[in-house]
Image (cartoon, rainbow, N blue to C red; front, side, top):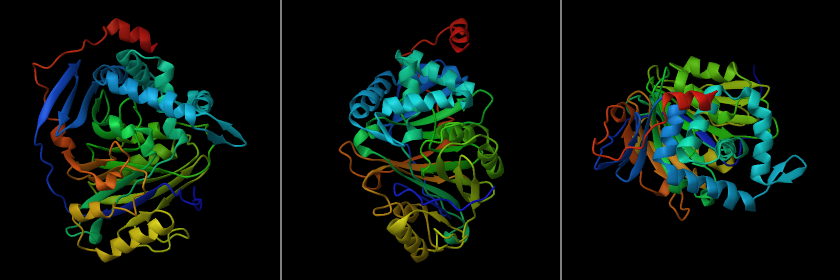
Amino acid sequence: MSRNPRRLSGLCFLLLLTLVCFTPVVASAQTIARCGEGWLEKIDGYYVLHLKGTHYEMGYQQGALLKEDVRKNMYNLLNEKGDMTLIDLGPVKLKPRQAIETVVQIQKPYTPQKYVDEMRGLAAGAEIAYEDVRATNFIPEMFHCSGFSIANSATKDGTLYHGRVLDYACDWGLQDHAVLVVAEPKGGIPFVNVSYAGFIGSVTGMNMQSVSIGEMGGRGLGHWSGVPMAFLVREVLETAKDLDEAIAVFRDNYRTCEYYYVIADGKTNRSVGMATSWEKMELIQPGEAHPLLPNPVKDSALLSAGDRYQELSKRVKQGYGEFTAESAIELMSRPVAMKSNLHNVLFEPKSTKLWVANASSDGKPAANQKYYGFQLSELLKRKPDSSAPVYPMPTGQAVSQKTE
């Protein structure tokens, strides 16, 4: 399946290369609370949410442990901002909630039951309406995002890095509810998801098989008959053991709208850019020229638009062969990142290290904020403080009744 991708969204960019890393250090940590096998902590002031169990259980843990953040975030998205904004849905303008409910009904047959269970668990844990959780989790279908990644001779020691720039509505306040989710799904691959309270899907993440992925949006609004994009990305994190399996998730499922991805595999130093729509799918290899990407760089996949693409290409050429993690992060600085820069992430998939920055509360771009360093393999070894408060999980019988 192959086609030329349409004009890349002005909101987003993606890039692939390889670099060197600096070591994440935990300066301070505090366990906030526990729930079943899940628990919430703050590391250097950043919320880190540990989830473990079935999908319903993980949803319940998030809802219970982040109850106030979930409620505030959803109220703001669905009632405050959602009530003031109009979405173009073809010739009709709708408020986001109206548009989302339309999308939800179309996508019901394509939404995996395990993610429905997780949303129901989240609603129960946070003690809010399931319909609100569902509507919030379909927002990524309406508003498109961004990302980047890098590899091989382009870096100082050949280490694969995958960077991700998310330019997405800083004025919606998502950054005030930022959370790093460390998940151990029953029967699945442990993964880290750079997310926000109340969301179970993903647009930015990496798993313990050293597979990382970032998404950016394109066009095709209105083609909703498929698996929601954020759940496809989540499926990659839970199930893909290598790059080929990650690609297969998109190839073998019904897709929606038009999205672009960079996927990387730190075990093999392979990476790829990918353009998908409801009808076509195209792979763009590192260093490969494309009519919309006229300045390829060896061992690099640079997907962006307009002046930002030109600036990104120029920066990669200037630093070629010398990139480290520190200098790779600088590739994400303004103006490659837009004013609406919500979060930036740099992955080193082989070591499972990552660095995360979020926009400030007053909307200043993530590129200008502090980067927090983490390592998934180390986060999975962490244990909660046994003296922290405990929120009870529902009984097994109650869970089975709610997921039927």
